[in-house]
Image 1 (cartoon, helix red, strand yellow):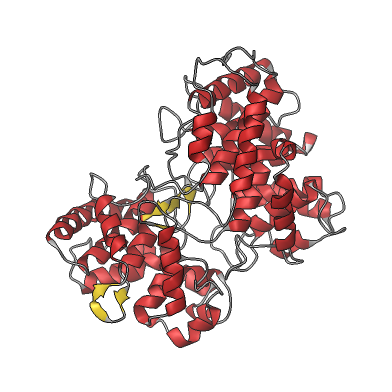
Image 2: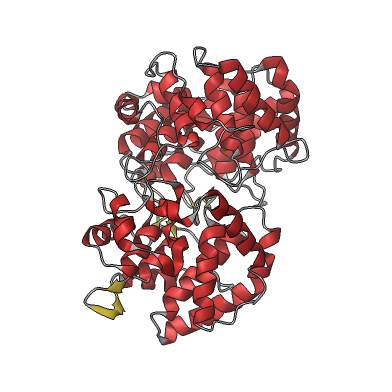
Length: 531
């Protein structure tokens, strides 16, 4: 399911990109600089595709004046328009965790708003769940908070008498119990923790008066539309309702995004992904200045609104600000996210993140004066060495594609020379072997995706001494990206409570990869594409 594009410059970017075979009035590098300038100038609070999961929760909020009616009926309309042919809801690619939790949330929303049309959609959704819930244990991507938020949804479905598999949730219940040993439910009332973002895990046990103290200034709970909608279902809140209206107003098609705002994440990932291209654009100065203003001695989260610092956003912002010489000297902030044998993104998380550890390692490579630097580098390196798939590549909890995690790891390892050569060499060989005949990369789409291809290119172009085989792969990958440059419907590969596409970040990854390829391969002839 493709969400509506919220990224203002997308249309302009597509119009200005030269089509395959057309004459090229300016160099490719100049085109990329121009488009990077537009992108950086457009950044505000974050632009993201819609998710069925969050839209379904908003669809369930009752009207405070008539609880038989819905407060946000447009969300019901969105759900009815965005059901897949197989009866499910979720991202374009069938990732079972995403489709199952999104479908169950949508079915519950439609059951509570009965109509002839919703009845047919509910039946198709239930049929999909009956087929797919038993497949959960075989899935390789687990959406955010799945083990916490799925059991209460299943309990609601059972109370409604929905015919779902009776024994399929046993493994999910075991994961929930494990998670709640680490983060007891009472933590939801004790401060800004990761539980604030997933308050709906409390099911029927919410205490609205206690949780309200952690409502952000924009009316949200944990910058999460679904968590905020959950609270409103139990107790109407004018500030929360205003937040949800603002979220729905972001979309041209009426759905809700996974998180909002996420301005720190967007600025950080865009600047990082553009790399040296950003420095050729005057607009980068104001974006970097805003990121520097967001920085604190304990790091940053993905937004200033209602969430605390996390290891991933902190490591990435650290890299960007260090690159622009805007960090305080002798910073030791990365130690705040240190566990026994890895670095964590969120405290007491059940499964560590590969990309978070790669980002910490890359940040430490560049920060020569970070306190306890050598020991921390060794820890991150050992973690990455221990969690490879087939001793060759990596997967990550924040992204569906192994090309994201592997690209991040290769870029982090590139600065370590001899001690990491064997790790990097095996991963690069895997990249070269898995490139499609058309020059693209993708694990799940045979014709490739622009985003995964861009991640692979960023990894190959960071290598200090690329050989002819690598250069050939870069050349074919860049050709694919130029041929598909005006594609806008990028599949949802990023992992939240539902899968999503962060539009500006994906665009920056593509622009940054093409610019890196231009620098690696040299400029193409100015009279044509040169592909």
